[in-house]
Amino acid sequence: MRPAVGWSLELSTVPLLKPGSASARALRFLPAGTRVYLPSLPSDPPSAIEDALALLRRENSALLPVPHIAATREESAASLERRIARWQRASSDRVREALVVRGESLATHSTAPPATPPPPPASPPHGAFRSSLELLESGALQRCGIETVGLCGHPEGVGGISAAAARAALADKLRWAEASGVTARVVTQFTFFSGCATEFVDALRADGFSVPVSLGVVGPSSLPLRQRMAERCGVGAPQSPYVTPFLRRVAAWQAERAPEAGVQAIHLYPFGGVAEAMKWLRDFADDEQFEAAMTLDPPPPDAKAFSS
Image (cartoon, rainbow, N blue to C red; front, side):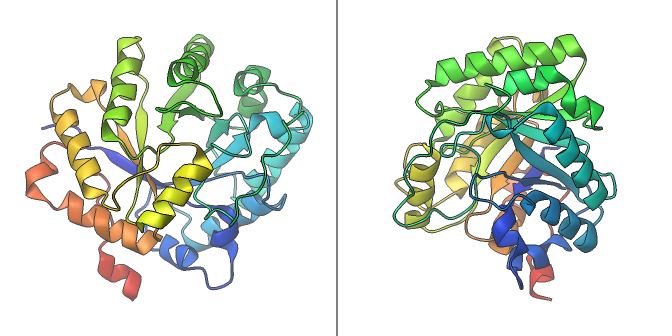
């Protein structure tokens, strides 16, 4: 039997923290051990991730929080360490993994609905680190109890950088992790083109990297919203609102590869809402046609739970 594929969620902090948030209510129904990624956006309040970590602890302490760290927006290694110390207090010392992003104001991991019209591009950041690799090399994360680093994969490139150049930058960080004995995981930006996603993983494996990969997938949402998010995040615009064909093609690709050569998790961007995303993921996981190729573990929660 093939090893099961895990799954994780990305939840923007500001919507999550709104009073009566549906995403906050959904947290209590997520299975233990689910990774919940918390993005860092330039427009977010300084305490947004800290407050979100406290919310996750209150609603479901069995979840695994994974905050984002935007390298080029960090003022110094010391200020980063102080902030992670606040995260640890807010989460009861449960932050053991972080996703390190470069820190562009656009074209980065994000689930927040874009403004209309979109804001003008921000000025290039001028922080203590010129790249995510510089932040990693500082050792600040390990000094603060971070045991696993998530590294961004960009199948379509990012911020004007080609896909090949983005993959070369990722390779530098993966070599650093290997040399430093640091556990790493690649988490990809979403793409609406399954071939682009699977080609990225194939190229990574061809380069000799066996690192776990969490493949970014957009959950059910309207075509206009998907197109706006594509524009916001710098990826190719979709022509269809349907998400199941994408994951079916990924599952077929996965079935043709050795488990270590495929993906180890699905990273879900629930643009249309957490409950709807979970219902869809559960329906997919229960489809016998694809179960042999991509069994999900833990099983997604039953959609009925979200209506209770």
